[in-house]
Image 1 (cartoon, one colour):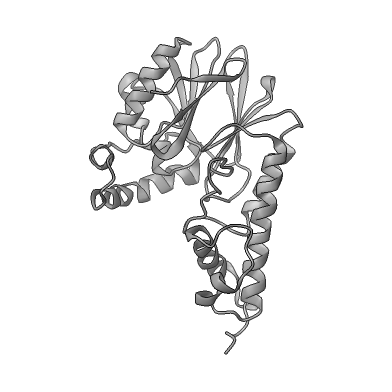
Image 2 (spheres, one colour):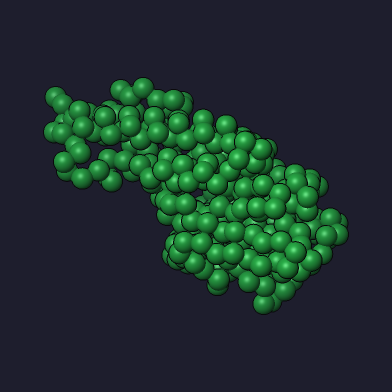
Length: 283
């Protein structure tokens, strides 16, 4: 089991092997704020066990950075521990978890994932403290800022800023251990602009905790943002040149390996572009 490592004063991060998922705990004199809850009720219970070993106080609030299973399916475990614990998220994240969570469980049910049964047995708990733009959590001796920087990895990603120690929790808008996941619910053209706002909220010394992998700095986020710009511009150029979507992955010059991320970027980008942004397919 991983230990929570202190990355700044009373900000601890645990990196879990399953899904390489990060869970962060922010300490205060009013207890812990836990950011992301891992991928099932059973996994959430394991997180709580590790938090008890940390011994930094009770959990008094939970935050989901977005709706995806590896960040929100552990919510029920925290409600088992504290039935009235508030769970914060962007309003789109809550709506998407309510709308798509069960279908994600169905996909696991048909898989051979070793955690399949835990995911299928998970009770989906939807965040009940939602917001559209920003929210400040008053923790007594410190505050935590929840900010929606715009669409990107999903339509409801938030970032968490701990200003007194210059820490930014970026969720899956930033990933370190792999390239950020571009899915069929991502927004290829919006993502770079959202990262512009994230970068604007950082300094040269900010510790940025990604959704997956080790903490990074502002320069790393800038580089990842530039790669996403290149992907968006390539999609736009290919569509505008009349390259059919089924040939775009092969014909484009991409900053990343031509994997499912790039295929999804093409699918999403071509769908988002208005007719004026696309030319008739080339022969």
